[in-house]
Image (cartoon, rainbow, N blue to C red; front, side):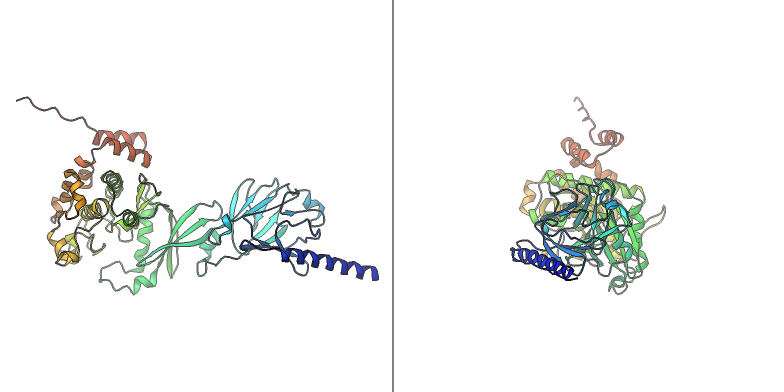
Length: 481
């Protein structure tokens, strides 16, 4: 009995010495997570854990994760070396040299935590097999099992702020909730990751109570049930220049719309950052916007809220794919019917909407007007065609279609571009061109731009032939006098 007591005291002393040694080492990197032993007990002190701070509780162990990567397996190069002292023989026989790796880029709490399965017999998270050489995202309290889903070895603790508070279970179980990307009148947008595929998305959270109390006109988009209209439309759309809807979760308090993530931000911020864009870049962006609107109009859909904020860019490059988003005010327009809802952003809204206060009927030509304002404002001059700063109320300017090319940059802009803007910003909607006519305008008959756009949009061969037939027609011969 005395020997046992002495052995216990020696073991405790040895653990204390290891703790003291590790504790005394400087901690240069932030601790971003912890790994707790569940059915595993680390007994091989001193060599089992390398370069990590070990916290010994009663029987299991806990290790602070403070490096970019943490590996576990039978091999001696791992941060956690698994031996017979730690696992039953039948389990250890199924453990690979490197069984799994846990990593967080730059140890930054804003980055997700990944676990990569490098084993032959499997690493499991909450009972689900990851798959050899595959990766998934770890979340707080996830259980890691080795070689078999029932052998639960570790519990992972994420020390980053919990961004998923208040989110429904369907969202938390499927997505890792990350940083806020932006916010609008009806909610916010967050960056999220599919936990199983690690794919990035933008999740738009629309709170229904914000719609119910919205101080908008009576016919405005303030019916909570209509929030799903955007999702229903987008779910059925497939076009390279229209943002794709990936998933939707409808809850009594909010609607969660998971959309493809566009890394380049929105067109408004691109303009703010650059002050104005070159005519060639403007043409490339405008052409893609028009393609998106044509796709919608051909399907009897009117966007009705076209503005730079709702135009997203795939990358930070000047030549980038562009996608139209935010169909929150869209509505299917059946043949022979009209739209009677006041909508849109005031400085981009068509005059017929302001004149009637949304009580009269109007058509898809409202999108043509908005495209004209976007082209004028964000793509060529960085200024608005209509503004209260011009002496009279902006609404009066819009109703009368009064605007001028004031900015000095217009002196460098082609007459074809200015002519197209004038055609789109005609007060009488019946005299405005259709989207097909806009796409066939002289300004857009630009072979290098069309070739660049086709490449970005990844058009099929049949689509390319159609573009060529429409826009690259040979010039007509002049008559001889």
